[in-house]
Length: 180
Image 1 (cartoon, rainbow, N blue to C red):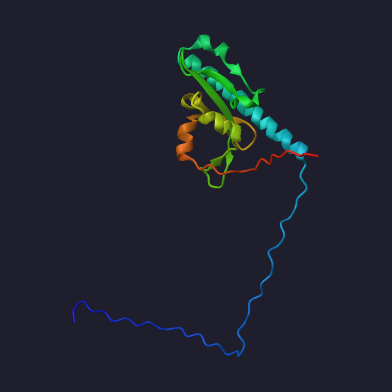
Image 2 (tube, rainbow, N blue to C red):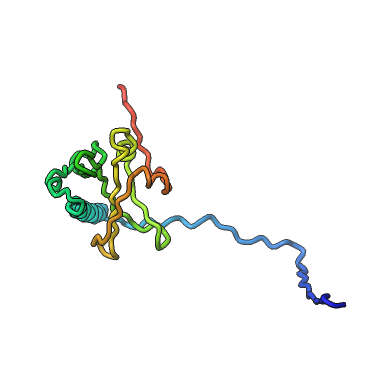
């Protein structure tokens, strides 16, 4: 018959010859190792990376203002890094009449070659969503080479990032009063 093919399939049959079923060895998971961490050194490294990111972003912002012919506003950038409750690092300008609120973030790898992450405080998030700041709240995402040198910056409005990124709680704040 035209178009009809015959095929042969050889079947593999497994026959258990033991009377008792074999039970695999099951063990509790191995305990996680607890490497010794030098928290002072870790904090020192993180602070150095954060400072490098902030300085890179500040230089980038000055160049942005110059490029946008807002040279007179370069000296009006306000450094708010020592005021963490403000919820942003720098107050600059998007135009002569519109302020820009800049939160600088050093981004790190998060798995794949094009996956990145940073940590956001609840205060920064709240400020970025506040009606007073929301329209001009920017994250300046600073990328680092294999070492600790920043090489690129991505400015992105917080509202745009929130629409396209995954936000996952990373910590808990435990607050309580004690009465005696």
